[in-house]
Image (tube, rainbow, N blue to C red):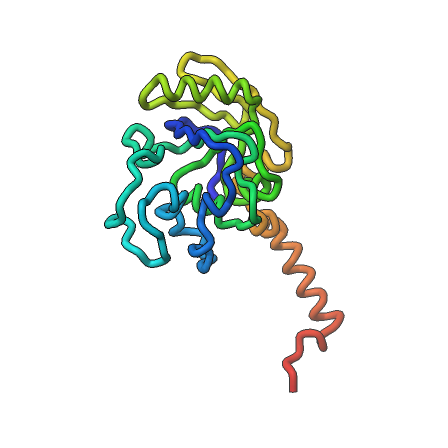
Length: 215
């Protein structure tokens, strides 16, 4: 998992509440567990005018030009601004995979669904909770300025606007540690690889029958 310390990126405003995981990555794309390749189908039903299916050439599909990610000013966005209860619905981990594969490293919203919130941290995406008033202000600023960028400083737990205004945010210390050091669950486990190998070697001596091949 790539480490996250700070970033500066264009903000894409998704002005919808209760965006569920089936909207983020529709169910027909859940057959793969490779974690990559989902970006072209992020928000598939909103981005395209036809029915998306796995294996389609997305470059030839008709675009919904009114959808935010299809607008030129937001196509290189790496920060998503959303409304309350983002990521509700089923607990598919493909949702943060799709957001990350598209290029989003941070999501700002007044609230998130719990499982989606946890899955973001486990996959290198930073979900940031701000108040509704703060989110309203950011929506207004994004609409008023093309190429609106925010700096996200995870170390200092703050968001910095182009006018140097700052928004502080809270983050669990353990989750922060994992993101800053690029540690997913596997990475955390591999920090103890020497202890694991020593245990396995000791168990082979203590209980060799557990490791013998079946007759």
